[in-house]
Image 1 (spheres, one colour):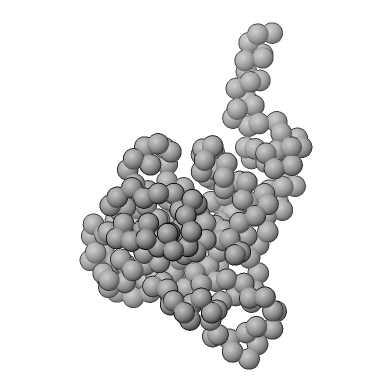
Image 2 (cartoon, one colour):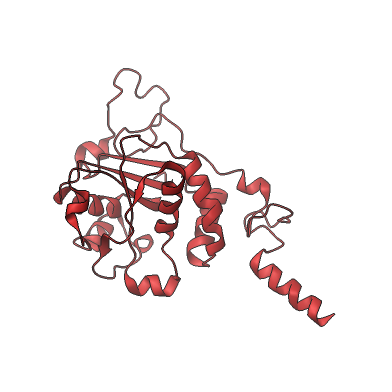
Length: 244
């Protein structure tokens, strides 16, 4: 009996019996921490969207007469990336899944999240190289994996985009962006990134991959480094984005 209890305890750690979002039974979902209903209830990003930063507009008729009309924030402060796209809204069960993935951390969620991301993201056919937003070495050792790299790997597997996993590096440890205001986020990541081999992305169409797009400060700083090295186009793809 003691052995059975131990095995059940270990199984509950690996694949908990209750869903971390609704607290109902996980059942036969096969996904750690989530039942089928909650996993299937991720809120998708839907249009019309700003053609630059990907933020949804309030009115469904926003782009009917001016398809290239960008949002006020992009007009006031044009980003360094050419376009940003996200799959889901950073809320509800998707928000919980990302938190479990990153901060628990539950690496086993990497595959189902990566597959969902790669299956649902709108891929631009001209994209050539996928680059994950890097973690600083100290944070990588603490977490044990880079969530952006796991997502980029699934993008590479499904869509055949070349994966460059060690070219873009984080030169200094920055504060977690979640703790900062929009302006503080910009200062926090300023000059934090560099390329080891700039020639590899010269004249290439590059996609930067990360988990969540909030203000775009991190993506913008990465794009600035890539554009300075001669990247032809830089697109930011994320699993989710906040709707501020």
